[in-house]
Every structure is written in structure tokens, then in C-alpha cells.
Image (cartoon, rainbow, N blue to C red; front, side, top):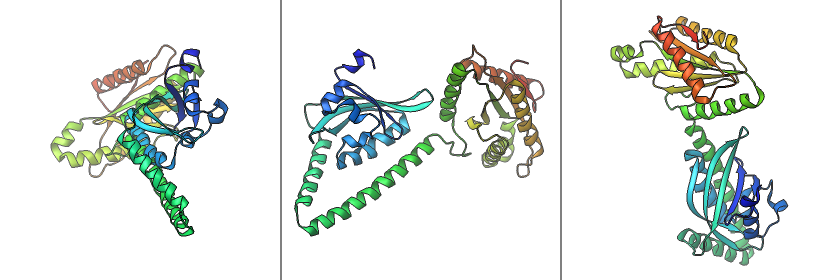
Length: 323
């Protein structure tokens, strides 16, 4: 960590998707009263009270998974000597070296806010319960068990929210956002390792006439059945996503130009020979293979140009950009 970031006038830390601390600057260490070795690889929730863990799960995780960032969240950490540290928390989810990382900045606040009052009230109630009789201690154990259950439910909810955020609701495939994240990941990987990967864009031929003739419910059924067919024809490591409308995209890690053409032809042939209810449809496909000078945008443009060529040369065919 460079000196400017380490000694910045605000706390900084980076955590994994699972909440493990990967990096922390000296400013935040001083604010919390910890040494660096005491926090690295520990869970971020180890610096929180029970009430703040619940608050963190209820607001921070869902927002970061759904929107990719959290802005101006009022929050409190627990210092090493047990004191509350009110902060203004900002976070953003990034992809670094192929891994999801959440970068956070914490600015110490002088005034307590309404959320902190609620947290302090809960803290005081817990302290009273701990000081009461064995019966009260037993009730606290029951409350703690309920909290653990709620925490597990929240974690499961967060996982479902993350899945919903990356899934197309109609077809069940991954959505455009997820595809773009994976395209960036494989582009960076290929730049570093020269590993081959290819991209296909498939478009249903004359899809508008299906909607116009049979109605949108039948059109939706065609999209759903085709999505299932493309997924079944794809290798396990492929990423199949709905790009929008009647367009689908397939990322094919490890496949060069010749292999990508063969895979695209399998998609085309399987679609042509597989009845979708009472209908038979065809698809046109454009393919492109990553080269050293390519970017995410240029690779998409190449596949799109190849698709345009397939459409203008009779449809129901496969074209690779380099051809």
C-alpha cells in the first residue's frame, strides 16, 4: 500500500465477497486501535457489535450486491477497547485480478445519528439482560439463537438477491450485466496469459413475425426453449446469457477460431432440427476470437459485424469475423 493511501485522512479497507479483510490503511488501524496483523484475513464483522452485524447484513450487503456500491451509510465500528466508532461508510464492488473485492472508505463522524441511537438502545438492552438472573440469561440465549437464525436467513437472502441481480427473469439464463462482467474477466485473463477464448452472438431469424403472428406469449416460449437448448449444447465452462430481445451471447473460454466455428455450427444445427412446440426456428450467429489488440468493446463489435453478415447472406448460418 502506498504512503498516500496508508496515511490518508480517512480509513480505508478492502474485503472479499465473504467479508474477509484483505487490506487496511494505518488511519483505520489507528481509529480502531488494532495492529495490521490483528485484522488482515479476519472477517470485517469481528470489528462490530451484534447489533451492527445485523445492520451491516440488512443494508450494506444487499445494496453492494444489487447496485455495486454503497454511498454515505451511517455506521458504527467497535474499537479494540470496546468503544463505538461512528463513521460515514462508502463502498464499491470491483473485479481485481479475477476476484470480486469491495473497497470501502470510512470517515469518522462527530455527531451520532438516529441509527446509532437505535444501536445504543439495543446494546443497553443486551447489557441489562446479561446482568440479570439465570432466567434472564436463558432468555438471552434464546434471543441469540433467534439472531443466529435471522442472520443465516439474511445471508441466504443476500445470496438469492445476488443470483437475481445476475439472472434474466424470462429465460433463467445469466443477464447482460453478468455477461459483461465475465467478458471483462476473460479479456483481462487473455491479456495476461494469452489464453484463447471466443464469443458468439446468436439472433433468432424473423422473430418479429413470430410475435406478430402468434403473440408475445408464444414469443416468450420460443425464447425460453431456445435458451434451454443453447445451455444444453454448451460446455460446462461456457457462459450463456440473454443479451437483449431475441439476441443471446455465449462466451467460450479456451476455444480458438476453428473450435468456436464448430461450436457455433452445433448451436445453429441443433436449433434448426429441434421443434419448439409447434414451431421450427433458425438462428444466425456471428463469432469472434480474442486477439492481442482486442478489447471488450472491439470483440463485441466484431461478433456483431459477423452476425450482420450472417443475416444479410441468407440467415440460418454462422460467420466468423476473420472470415
